[in-house]
Length: 413
Image (cartoon, rainbow, N blue to C red; front, top):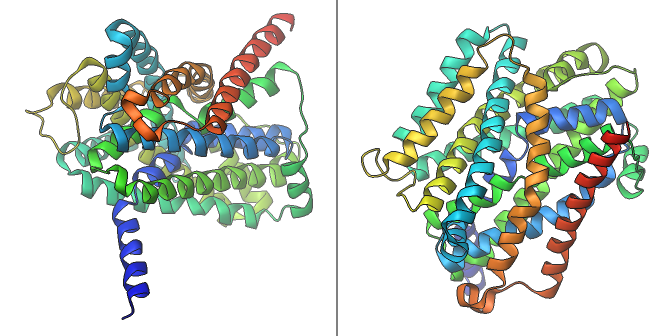
């Protein structure tokens, strides 16, 4: 074996050893609330919101890369760095806001799980307790390596949406045109949907989870280039899945003027329009995404709350070593799944509004990240370039302006 082949093989093996945090974090981005948001975007506005996926993809790559770099260089989670550099008061208020948002997100995941299983004829009173126990047992009784392998398998199942899009037989020329030519509306529902799309694609919790996962996996600066590719690959795949969800709904539901309230409606409505296989794959994707995300979101919340408060945390620790970490995880699952058992619970508004809340909170998290990643005492030679800073500042300003526009538009309406 030549030296070049040995080096190439070593690089490939190293990449697969490091593979995980970036792909898993980005995949969970397409959770139950995200699928509902993209389904509504395609069903109500056709292909006209596809253009937003280009700037969203660029922003997602830049922000996720920033979080992973901070984790590899500092060896600390994002909440940990915020507490050390901005004090306990600022950390507490940020953690409280994120906790409330993630509670809504966790409820949305279990709502998506219940909705998906009802398509297959399983009542929520059966599916929710089983789903809640599975996600609790997986993290509380598992190790980080075992949990990560299961999460990577779950990430692969998202390709059911690619097949659903192909089965809907969309006009690909029109799709490509809408991707590259922006079509913007200024009404409140459109702006809320746009904020929801940004909020579900670049969610605040993602930065905390990714950085904590990089730290727990023990990735160092010398391994960082491989992690960077893990992040980029994950971001590209997750936005391809988002595009396919919009295309599947736009090519069928929008074309036939069918309004929906969520992902379950989209899955059921696809059957007579795109065939039962497209509908079945859409429902399988929703069930997988919901249960997968119901693991990750409480886990991300437990990570950043424990880091922010200075408590022990991590999947590799025992319940006795990190009681706060596992109790937060357990309570979020219990409340998230238990609340969906009430028939009067407005599931669709919870799923959609949780994504909008993500979009509103995002600029605040980005401002903290910018201050930390440009601090040479923390990052040394790994501080942001000027280009990176311009991209992240632009995202923050755009999200603030969109939120203000939504408020004004809603008031005038």
